[in-house]
Image 1 (cartoon, helix red, strand yellow):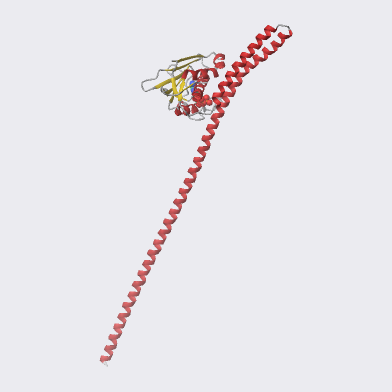
Image 2: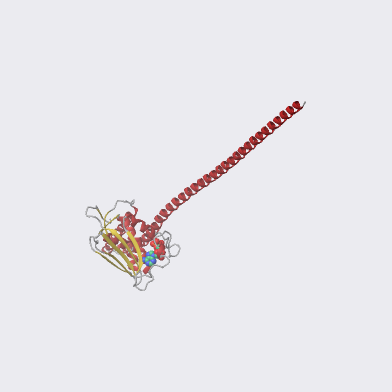
Length: 320
Ligand code: ADP
């Protein structure tokens, strides 16, 4: 009986030990599985978070790309507007100048016509003939003026050629001839004959017309109305220094740093769009030249353009 009972106890103890071991193994397996699941959950959460962050970054990038594209488009549009407005500004200037220029001979022709009729009625054909001759001359000068405008209408030709500075200045002078005369402006031009720069004829004329127009505006209210246009001989580096100085009040200090930016103007509404110098500097750059502006110690503004002198082999183009 003792052996049997002891044996039974031993078996029971062994069974209990086995059960405890097994339970521990199951608990350990379960907790390992649990840890694995938790690690898995954490991983999935991290992946989900990273994916969300990536998607958000992607969307942000897409939004930035869209915004950049929109800004680019806006820039392109405003650039086109500037170019368009620039053309309109030049057109407006030309129209105003042309009306003024053509009005004077038209009034004279009207009077000469009326007088010629009266001379015919009075039987004085010689006087009537003299009037007709003067009418003919006035019509010729009007034709010269409209011929000048053809240079503006010509399609911009980017090819740089040798352009005579004197001819370009003479063209600008002709455009403002009436104004220079009427306002009693003394305009001195000091450019050695034959000085030629690498440029494009009608665009160079536009540059000088813009600068001379500004100088005329500047001296309008000045006690002394004087404009001096000069160009030195080409230096060793083959550059021609062209200057236009006036006796006006000079460039306003707050305008000076922004002078060549579009829409910078101190002129009353309707008189200036602030595009003249922006267009001028763009043209000058296209010539491979440089433009700068300063206020002179003795008063008034001075604009300087450093042109590349025309090369001897460069084709020569005349102003008209
Ligand atoms: P706008 O003539 O339509 O004003 P511009 O670009 O030609 O446009 O000139 C911009 C501004 O620069 C002018 O409004 C004027 O204030 C200044 N400026 C240009 N030329 C002169 C000058 N010769 N003297 C003084 N100020 C000048």
